[in-house]
Image (cartoon, rainbow, N blue to C red; front, top):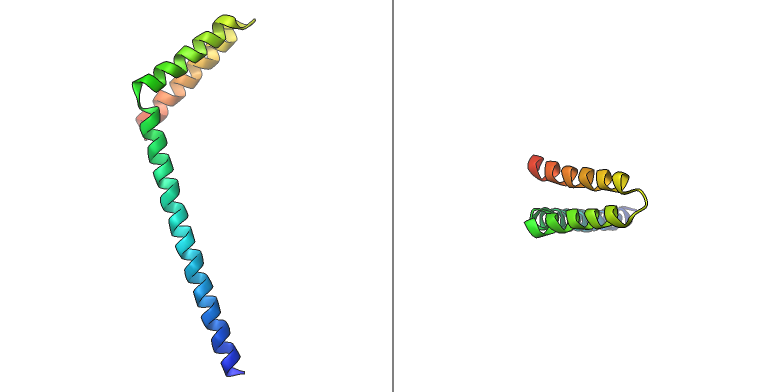
Length: 85
Protein backbone atom coordinates (compact mmCIF):
# COMPACT_ATOMS: atom_id res chain seq x y z
CA UNK A 1 0.00 0.00 0.00
CA UNK A 2 2.87 2.36 0.79
CA UNK A 3 4.38 1.97 -2.71
CA UNK A 4 1.13 2.97 -4.39
CA UNK A 5 0.73 5.91 -2.05
CA UNK A 6 4.22 7.22 -2.84
CA UNK A 7 3.62 6.97 -6.57
CA UNK A 8 0.29 8.76 -6.21
CA UNK A 9 1.88 11.52 -4.13
CA UNK A 10 4.66 11.94 -6.71
CA UNK A 11 2.08 12.03 -9.50
CA UNK A 12 0.13 14.72 -7.66
CA UNK A 13 3.30 16.74 -7.08
CA UNK A 14 4.22 16.56 -10.77
CA UNK A 15 0.73 17.63 -11.82
CA UNK A 16 0.77 20.53 -9.35
CA UNK A 17 4.13 21.63 -10.71
CA UNK A 18 2.83 21.45 -14.29
CA UNK A 19 -0.29 23.41 -13.29
CA UNK A 20 1.63 26.20 -11.57
CA UNK A 21 4.11 26.36 -14.44
CA UNK A 22 1.28 26.68 -16.95
CA UNK A 23 -0.45 29.29 -14.78
CA UNK A 24 2.78 31.28 -14.59
CA UNK A 25 3.20 31.22 -18.37
CA UNK A 26 -0.42 32.29 -18.83
CA UNK A 27 0.07 35.21 -16.42
CA UNK A 28 3.17 36.31 -18.29
CA UNK A 29 1.34 36.12 -21.63
CA UNK A 30 -1.57 38.12 -20.23
CA UNK A 31 0.68 40.85 -18.86
CA UNK A 32 2.53 41.07 -22.20
CA UNK A 33 -0.76 41.34 -24.10
CA UNK A 34 -1.96 44.09 -21.76
CA UNK A 35 1.30 45.97 -22.17
CA UNK A 36 1.14 45.72 -25.96
CA UNK A 37 -2.47 46.94 -25.98
CA UNK A 38 -1.53 49.90 -23.79
CA UNK A 39 1.32 50.79 -26.12
CA UNK A 40 -0.91 50.44 -29.17
CA UNK A 41 -3.77 52.51 -27.73
CA UNK A 42 -1.37 55.24 -26.61
CA UNK A 43 -0.20 55.99 -30.14
CA UNK A 44 -1.62 59.23 -31.56
CA UNK A 45 -2.41 57.68 -34.93
CA UNK A 46 -4.58 55.03 -33.29
CA UNK A 47 -6.51 57.62 -31.28
CA UNK A 48 -6.90 59.75 -34.39
CA UNK A 49 -8.12 56.71 -36.34
CA UNK A 50 -10.68 55.89 -33.65
CA UNK A 51 -12.01 59.44 -33.65
CA UNK A 52 -12.04 59.56 -37.47
CA UNK A 53 -13.98 56.31 -37.62
CA UNK A 54 -16.47 57.68 -35.11
CA UNK A 55 -16.83 60.89 -37.11
CA UNK A 56 -17.36 58.91 -40.33
CA UNK A 57 -20.00 56.74 -38.68
CA UNK A 58 -21.68 59.84 -37.32
CA UNK A 59 -21.69 61.55 -40.71
CA UNK A 60 -23.23 58.66 -42.66
CA UNK A 61 -25.73 57.45 -40.05
CA UNK A 62 -29.38 58.40 -39.81
CA UNK A 63 -28.82 59.48 -36.20
CA UNK A 64 -25.56 61.46 -36.39
CA UNK A 65 -25.85 63.12 -32.98
CA UNK A 66 -26.19 59.79 -31.14
CA UNK A 67 -23.25 58.24 -33.00
CA UNK A 68 -21.12 61.33 -32.45
CA UNK A 69 -21.84 61.22 -28.73
CA UNK A 70 -21.02 57.51 -28.65
CA UNK A 71 -17.73 58.10 -30.49
CA UNK A 72 -16.78 60.96 -28.16
CA UNK A 73 -17.54 58.79 -25.12
CA UNK A 74 -15.36 55.99 -26.51
CA UNK A 75 -12.52 58.43 -27.17
CA UNK A 76 -12.89 59.94 -23.71
CA UNK A 77 -12.90 56.53 -22.03
CA UNK A 78 -9.78 55.52 -23.94
CA UNK A 79 -7.98 58.71 -22.93
CA UNK A 80 -9.00 58.38 -19.28
CA UNK A 81 -8.02 54.74 -19.09
CA UNK A 82 -4.61 55.51 -20.55
CA UNK A 83 -4.14 58.26 -17.96
CA UNK A 84 -5.07 56.10 -15.00
CA UNK A 85 -2.97 53.11 -16.03
